[in-house]
Amino acid sequence: MMRFPPFALRGLFADVAHPRVPCRRLVTGEVTPGRLVQHWLRLFETHGVSEPRESSEIIIAHALGAKTFPSLPPSVTRRHISADQLKDIQSMCQQRLGRVPVQYIIGEWDFLDMTLKMRPPVFIPRPETEELVGLVLRDACGGLRCSADPLILEVGCGSGAVSLALLRRLPQGRVIAVDSKEAAVSLTRENAERLGLQDRIQILQHNILTDPLERLLAWGPVDAVVSNPPYIPSADMSRLDPEILRYEDAAALDGGPDGMDVITGVLHLAARLLKHDGDVFLEGDPRHPEMLLRWLHIHPEVHLQLISTVRDFCDKPRFVHLRRS
Image 1: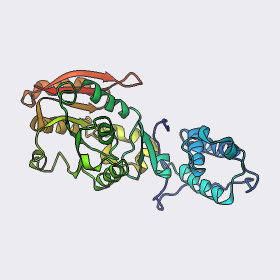
Image 2: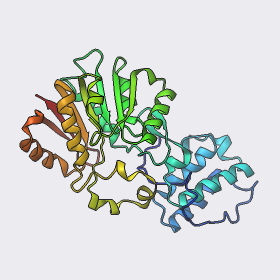
Image 3: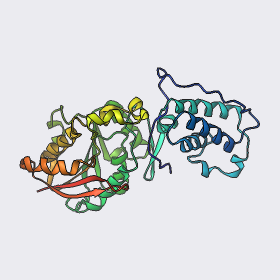
Image 4: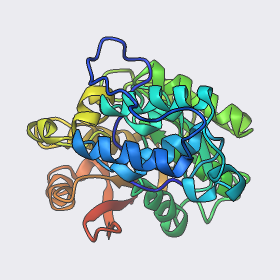
């Protein structure tokens, strides 16, 4: 399974200039996959491309019909690359030199036990968000574990990663997945159909900050609200890697001056949509748990209580669990 952090590559970006590096001294009939990995690894390093080895190995493995380079059978790794394969690899690696995310170049990415289709500029799910799914399943005592058929609202569904992962683990569960962008709604719908989960998910284009709440109220009270919202403070956006800045949707990342704009919108929404004892699970910036505590103190009308703060695999306070009282 592909696990390294997302960055950027090129697929539908004819307007972006990037270096054109010829595949010198690589002649069809002489090039093995291993030699080609080393060739592009060196070029990626020379041009400052992040994750150079992973980029080279995943692109070449994809061109040869595998997900990872180590999974290629010996019969393939010993065989010389064909002219068509060499051309395909050359094209994809040139895209990577333009700093397009690998996920966009190969058109898919693994999230937990699912392979999801990826398409720019929809937000690419990060490895830490897999922990958000685990947190929901483990800690939602007031809602999911006490309900035979839980109803979950995901705000900001992106590719559908979180919603679809929850549906695969909750056989009787149902999800309402909303996103402000049509590209995300379309991709979530496509991934749901690919996984055969389309009958248990309702996917809506909806901006929780500007669209009428009544549209969601029609779906009834929910057991849990889950979100990996835009949470990067606006002042920090310029520090992101060029892959992210050039190709991923900024609206899926920029959370306003303090990164809390959409987070507080989710909490106001939860106050209206959650059942009594329903749960909220949020991913955010490590600075947000303390900010959230202050916000809850100022806004008692939302009737939400902070249950726990959970650290991610880098030991940063990344997730919060709240409950409606």
